[in-house]
Amino acid sequence: MGISSDYKRSLKSVEAEEFFDLYVFRPISFVFVKLIYGTKITPNQISSIALLFGIVSGIFYAFGSYESMILAVISLFLCNVLDCADGQLARLKNNGTKIGRIIDGFIDYLTSISVFLGIGIALSNFTGNPIYSWGITIAAGLSKAFQNMKFDYYRNLYLEYVYGKVSKLNDEISEFKDEKDRIIKNTGNRFEVFLIDLYLLYSRMQMNTAKPVEIETSPENYRKKNETLLRLWGWIGSTTHLVFLITFTLFNRFDIYLILTVTLGNFVLIMLTIWQKSVIKSLAPKIA
Figure 1 (cartoon, rainbow, N blue to C red):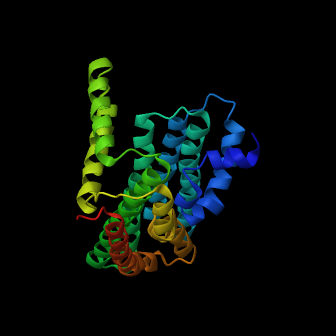
Figure 2 (figure 1 turned 135 degrees about the vertical axis):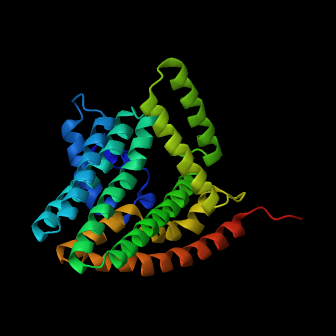
Figure 3 (figure 1 turned 90 degrees about the vertical axis):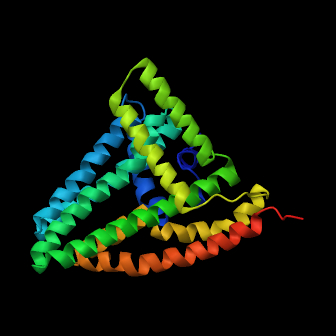
């Protein structure tokens, strides 16, 4: 197989990737994956290093100096490159695990917690107003988490109906419950059980924020109706948030990122939700 075919095989699907992942982070991470492909490095090991960079970036933000924020930006960039690489390596080697999928999925959320904590500390020191600083930081953090969750939900729905790559959420919950029982019976690994419990909680939250609707259509028609919409959802995805945060940090105005996340980000979320519900409704089976 050629480089181009390997690259495409390492992706979930071209249209399901966020813009900055597709054209910036995944090409870089693909080069890294090809360099380590013949080694014994595993996707889970890459995920662990990515998480380390993500947590360190929050620590750098907390220091509050411009120099430390540059280091935070570098750490965030490397975190996302490695976060892309673990999944690409797993898809190319076909050696992904259920626990690996959970770790990969939670990297962004654990990184976000660290980063927003660091930002809250830094902003409080800058403004001298902890109530405003922590208020806007927490509001932005929760807004980002909810926006990312909605994008992930509709991306998985797209992959399920167009490619059959993702199990229905109810099926996934059942699969991970079975995996939890297997781990308890065979290894008793409490950390892995804890990770599965977190995943099950997250999955139930997804189901509560986007009630499933029965869809009756062909993969081609689902793609036609949702491809553009999915690309728009990507503009409130985790990588897009990361790029905007990095950009405003470089201009020493990460506070603007927080304000835009709460205002513009949530406005886009509401508009896309209305549009998505209309599209889903049009694909639901008609009752005679």
